[in-house]
Every structure is written in structure tokens, then in C-alpha cells.
Image: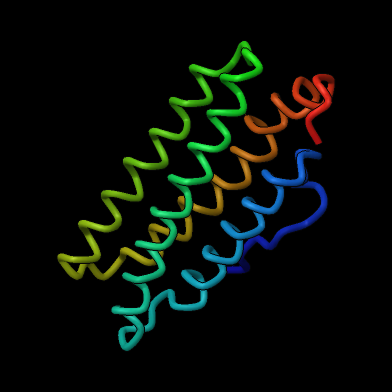
Length: 135
């Protein structure tokens, strides 16, 4: 299964957010590379922890920006982030319990969430913030 990599189509035309998204793609790539490798279980745990930590910081920055400019879709956007946080927390718990399908589950979730969230949900605020001079 090929994993997704950063491409220009994922740009929201806001440098800070694009850089954070690129880092999320890097972390995802690390997780993908470890998928199914039993000897990388501990490293996978570190990557999932890093994903949770980094995503939280990214979401906080994004939500602050959206709230500062009164983005009309702020509440729904925040809910999308909560879904991600909850799912990653479940992955972390499952990893600690040594569930064998964990890495496949993570990859499927991340591929669909990253693609959908950035290309659909994040693109909704892109033009709005660009009009406010945020780039």
C-alpha cells in the first residue's frame, strides 16, 4: 500500500500551517515505514507518541488562528481535531496492549484523515484567512 507524501495540492497557502502539515506527513511516513515490523514496535510507539504530541501543537496553533479571525467554521473544525485526538489516543492504548493490527489501522486512518482533512476541511479556511492577509 503506498503512503501519501506531501504535494503542493495539500498547501493551504499559509506558510506556518503548510510547514506543520509537512511535519505531520513526515511522522506519518515513519509510521508507515514501520507497519507490520514486529522488531520496530517500540519505535512505532515513539512515532505514535510524536504524532499525538505534534498534532496537538498543530491543532492548537490552527485553532488559535481560526478563532482570532472569527472563522465561521471554527467549531466544526475543532470537532474534526477532537476526532483525530481521540483516535490517536486509542491507537496509543492499543499499542501498549500489543494489538497486531494496530499499524495497519493507523495507516488507513491517517491516510484518509490527512487527505480528507487537509484537502477538504483545511481548504475551507484557506481562502478566508488569505483574504485577511494571512499567508
